Image 1 (cartoon, rainbow, N blue to C red):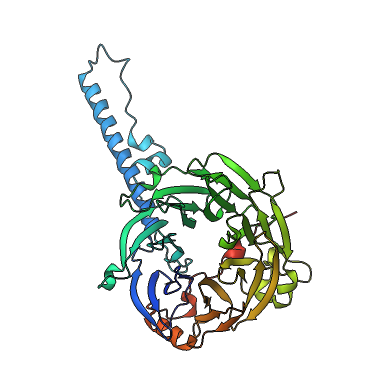
Image 2 (image 1 turned 180 degrees about the vertical axis):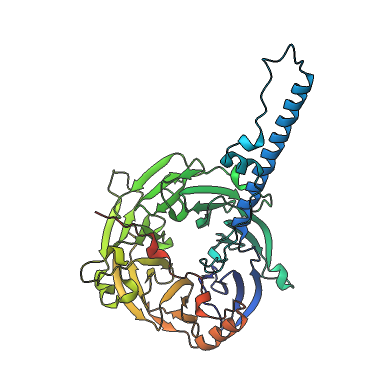
Length: 464
């Protein structure tokens, strides 16, 4: 049984396709009728890496305590031997017998920490690719991992004669907390990493030097989990960094001096899960969505305070008739009828060819297309129902690809037409078959699926 793809990417040409299934990344070259596997990489990190790392730290602490204890005992013994019973009787440091040491203190000093591996019945431990992006010049692939909280950077060489050299590992940089979003600086010199604790880090893209995670200093921080990060250029030609979080904030800071905040965009009431800066709007328009019942458009470069919000486009009427048991609010927060449902925007991507946006909602089997003008006017265009819930999507040139949670039909390729319509690619079946055949991420049962729908878990619950 092949595992679905939790992440998919098309490069700028639309010719190369990247897909991540569990802890494996696959690189394909697309033709009209099929896809050729160029390279693959599987993350072989120990699934208990974090536990073992913490255990190693405890062992080092224990050994240090033992060393200090031995030194103290040696000093006390030397002092006692050198002291004269007659002259130093009142100055002797009493040595406390071991039986008089409190039990808690004795445990710290004498008990070697054990490796606390989960036993039978413990929650499953997943090792998987959390996120994936390409550098702006499409010459590097950047993936983030879940278990060891790392950013893995590859150099891409499509002309390599060896599949092993299509993806060349530059470095695996550990981060103290799990990465939640990633991008590159405008000149592709640095990788920008946002984590689940609200910090943002900047590391060199091509420098193979790995820095100890405890020595990485954040360039900015929020007080809640970060969900999106992206660099852009403002109206004065200065590079800025956009960061969005679980607490409905979108902050714009200068880069690399990110301690200087340019402005904060106020308008969302729930978490933000996705935002984009479409190219045809020349960097002036930001579109964002998440746990709200609307999608926001922003003219973020406006100088007048609190004038950035262009519009809030209500989306209730698009999805309300598609909500089902999958969208029920947790029992603890349900109404008396136990029928309270909620939804959220999962991802927004630009369709540069038609100057439109493609939007998906978590656990809703439809693709929604919106028109977006250069000045930020957003309007719904068309809905494309599909067979299964959409995990994620990607688009480039005249191609759009959906990834499904259906293990029999994992992908669907669409052609973006000149008349702004979408049609299923004529060779969709052969493309999907060739990709699925190359997918080496095999599971034995549906219980082995990694978490595929995590967006709505960011919603904060409030008890009153």
